[in-house]
Image (cartoon, rainbow, N blue to C red; front, side, top):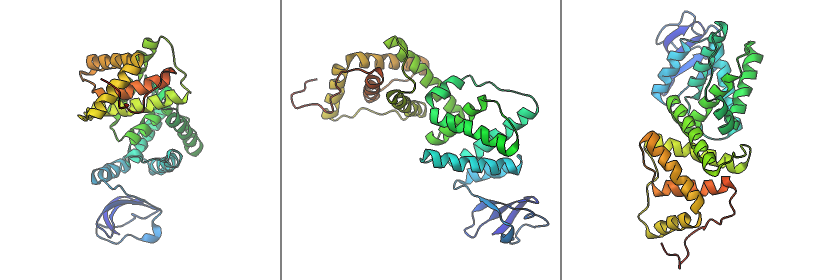
Length: 294
């Protein structure tokens, strides 16, 4: 490894043997170092590396702006989150969470508090991520002695969901608002509230996450021209009329609020999930039979 830039006495921007930029930390590792010199690897305590070059640049810019202990703590939090969720997370989670946590700590010191209008929605729709957000707050308090307000758990949860869906935070807020609005449409249609702790509701919310993501990214499922698939869609619509009508209500809402049309395929998937969350006894056909008619 060779020095590319000295950030401070304890942090270097370096280049590894493959020519990739990395961030190297260690006590005194940057003291009196110059560009092009070899890094004293005996002093290396931690190496931060992003596969994406743009994210690596963002990491370097961030590490110049926040205390190193905030980045180190966030890395510990992210490692725990990955082990708990056991699914791919966008590597930018380290950057976005470290930036948020450091900013939240500064705001706490200045007596500035932010409310999250989506607090209730986050608790309801992302329970696993919200629980991890709360755990992060406990670790921040334990390690840094900073007791951040409970609302911060929901902000951290959104960062985690954002890393799961590979979206931008601005889009994540829109996704959450859409989920909340769709749930309101559905509960108004069925004239009752659903059990937020039920497996069916949890699966419905997961479907809505990816549904909203496809909607905002312009990647909605398209209708297959295959005759078998077309018959299946018609069969679902006919056998699950009540829930299909609810799916059409969702389509009306999306049309009026987002100006986008839902495909027949999207409507059918919504219908299937609506049937499950509503606890209907109507049977969902697995495939159209040979005698099925449009």
